[in-house]
Structures are given as structure tokens and as C-alpha cells.
Length: 260
Image (cartoon, rainbow, N blue to C red; front, side):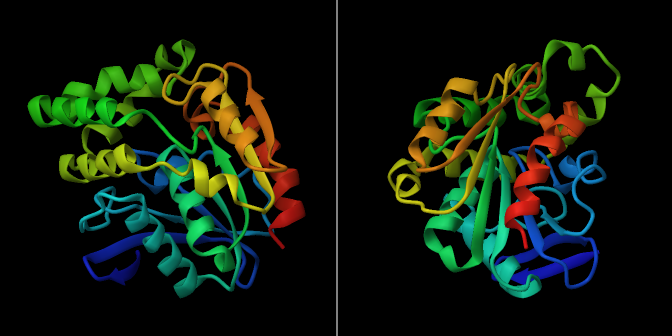
């Protein structure tokens, strides 16, 4: 078990791949932990080192304030500085994509290129995130789980037994950590900062994504000069879970070009 000490406590991470290889930092979505990436790791290029972590209040990581995207970006920066050999490719999904954009804006010295999957420079509204917070505080994490599964996964996946572990992961996420991340999302607006980014960027959407619809994701690709946009047919909000081979196939040429 690998732990980085932060001012608020422990940040849990995992590093896989050959020692000394170029690093790819993977920032996961709201209500998931670093196991989000398990299925997509095998088909990704094996000559790279993959750095995954549990953001504050998720998985095995402690919770500080964490109610600003800047707090999460600071964790990512500290992790890169502690365990990675200099600028890395950052792969961020959902809130992880906002963390990636903020990290690239705040610490361009640490970011070589971006893959932004199922995310945007602005996700939802303050009102929609407050409604989510209210629901969690009223009904607990289990009370929102079914509605979130509908936003995360396409109907075909939801009809399989493979759904259960993901529903359990969400339902067992500490409510305080989830609410803090919702507050960070409510205040996160990277549109101006992301429009000023000048680094290789790949943007990926899922055709059946109910949490970050393709048009919202495409608008962020249009915002970042030179960014490319890719749509995965039939995939929902977590293509690394639903269609890991397709997700990896899109990302592999970009990683081979920009990670080293």
C-alpha cells in the first residue's frame, strides 16, 4: 500500500509499470476509487508507468477541506513531484478531467499532455450540485445510487451483473468525501483557463453518457486550441469500465506519441 503524506493526512496511490518508464497520472471520477482503471490498464501500452490515486475523501485517502478543484489539483501536483520523474501525461475522467485541466493551468511544468475523458471545463451548475448534496445529506449515498448508475452506464451494461460492484463502490463512498467533491464541482469553471492551454490534448466522450453528454464534452475540445475530439459509440460515462478495449485503443497512439 503506497501513501503520500499530505497536510490533511494520507493520500493513497498505486504505481504500476516498469521502473524509470514515463509516467501517466490517472485521475478518476466522482464516487469511484483507483480501481476505476483496472480493466483499461492491460490493453494500454505496457512500456509506461501508470500512477493512480484515491482523491481526498474517496477510497483509502483521508479528507481535508477538498471543496475546491484547486485542492485536488494540489494533491495531484504533490503526487507527481513525489513519485514521478518530471512532466507527465495526465488522464482525467469526469471530476478527474477538471482536476487535470486545473493542474495544467496551475503547474504547466508538471504536465506534458492531457487526455480528458467524459468531462468538460464546466460540469453542471451550482444549483444542480447543491441538489445532489441535499439528496446525499437527506437520503445517504445509497439513496442516490440508482439514479447515478443511470447517468454512468448505458442500458446494456446496467442489465448485467457487472453493474453491482460499481453501485456498491458508489454507495460505500464516504458521504463527506462525496459532498466535498460536489462542492468543488459546483465552484469549478475552467473555461477561461482551459482556453489558454497550449499543450497536446485529446478529448473523449461516450455516446450514451448521461453525466457529461457528448455535446458538452465536444464544447471543451473546441475550447482548447488543437484538441482532438473522439466519440465512443454506445459507451456511457465510464468507458474504461464499459468498453476498456475501445477506450484504450483511442488513447494508445496519443500516449505513444506524447508520454515519452
